[in-house]
Length: 147
Image 1 (cartoon, helix red, strand yellow):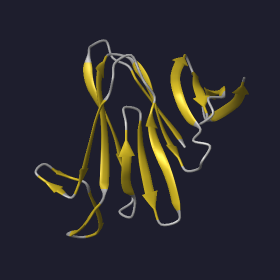
Image 2 (image 1 turned 135 degrees about the horizontal axis):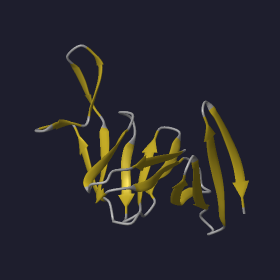
Image 3 (image 1 turned 90 degrees about the vertical axis):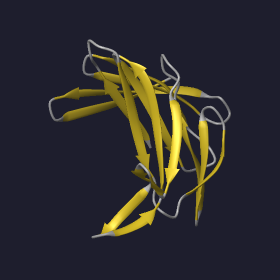
């Protein structure tokens, strides 16, 4: 799963992208670009593709001040879960976050937008590169694979 966020402003802002995980998902080892995730029946990773500025990654689970890292399945019922935050500063940028759930570890390495078309560069665990483009025309999306 690749999540692409495009933000645009005349002014510089700090943008924060949040990823809230199921309560059964646990975090494993991490480095500058990936966080291992594990749950019963699967192991995968979350990758944040580099942008113009480096994103600052934070994580919270069951944190009360400030309140974050909970799921609320019912009124006043709070279940701890991991919430990941990716914050960076800029005016206009396109960022890609990948949730990979298999050993191929296919992930986005970059993303760009040009009008109504978004192009995502991809790489697998062996380093093989490819890309895909998504074009939007009103309510219709057209997806095309690249080399």
